[in-house]
Each structure stands twice: as C-alpha cells, then as structure tokens.
Image (tube, rainbow, N blue to C red; front, side, top):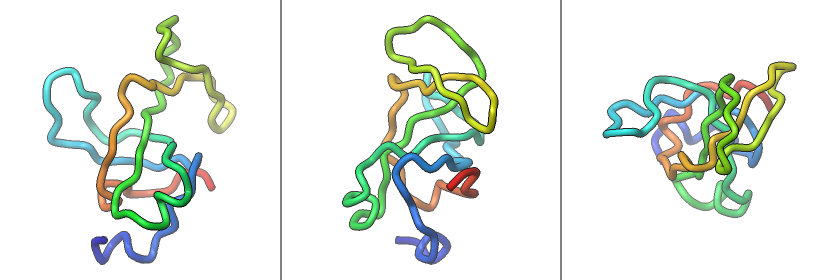
Length: 95
C-alpha cells in the first residue's frame, strides 16, 4: 500500500473521488466519484478495491442502477466496475 493511502479507511459503499487517468478506449476517464463495492474483508486485506462510477446521467441501460447521492439523482454504472490501487482514491466524499 502506498504511504499516502496507508492511513485512509476504505469502507464498502463509501463514495470517493477517484483519479483514473490514463484510460484506454471507452473507459470512463477524468476525476469522478466512485462507490466502493468490494467486500470489507477485501478492503481490509488487499491494496486494491473494486469501484463503480457514479453519474448524474440517467439512461435506461440494464447495467445501471439508480442512486441518490447527496440528494442528487443519478446512476451507478455497473458495466464500468474496476479494480484499482487504493492510491487512486483521492478524497472520501461520503462516509
């Protein structure tokens, strides 16, 4: 685990601002909010977490689920789940 992420707590269902650049092809890029979806046992043990992006866009894709984050409606985009190193998680937006 990197020194910068060693003191952070990574809790399932918390929302973090994540830096994913560089990306390739159709991957979602830029810094954006993601929800940690990996089980807590994994978050406590590994240097990686599973994350899914949050978006304000609402489309009727079968791989998206509706969400309400900080009283704003949007979706969690499940076809963009990624395993990433914890050092990519910059700021916790909600605990």
